[in-house]
Image (cartoon, rainbow, N blue to C red; front, side, top):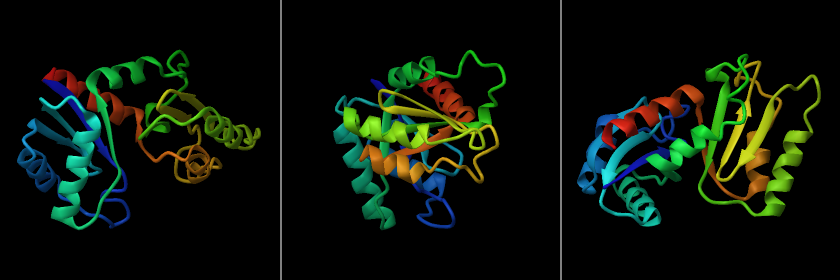
Amino acid sequence: MTVVISMLRGVNVGGHNKIKMDALRSLYESLKFEDVATFIQSGNVVFRTKERDLKKVGKQIGDGIEKTFGFRPDVILRTAEEMRRAIARNPFADRKEIEPNRLLVWFLAGEPDAEARKKALAVGAGLKEANPEELRMDGREIYIYFPNGMARPKLSLPAVERALKVSGTGRNWNSVLKLMEMAELLG
């Protein structure tokens, strides 16, 4: 069986698209996923499935949420192995001053093309000394370090996403590691 980490975009943010995690867990179980576990209130679910086609799994989840809760969030999926590789590729791993709660991994729904990557990196390159955020891209992940916190960033994530033309959802480094830990327990 494949261990999958599911991250929903925009669930329980600012009082919108509310889903209680026990209801979300029940929905995933009704879709015949096994060993379903949720993490915090932002739509993180770890489970096992016999289905190997993640596009099909994502469509099932999206359809189920839309039917049950009346809205359709973006569903970003990673296998446990893909998450392990994303963690291993962290471009900030060797820097001791990096605070895990200020490091965001933006998981993309698909692979942006070269021109889109170039435009997104240009948004990040527009940062000056007064704007200390650092943006790195690798595969379907964007790693962004916010040394002054994420509350009032100078880097515009919507501008980066528009440049990429691929939707995604972000999780801080602590959450990424916790999701990996949960996935390893199922593996």
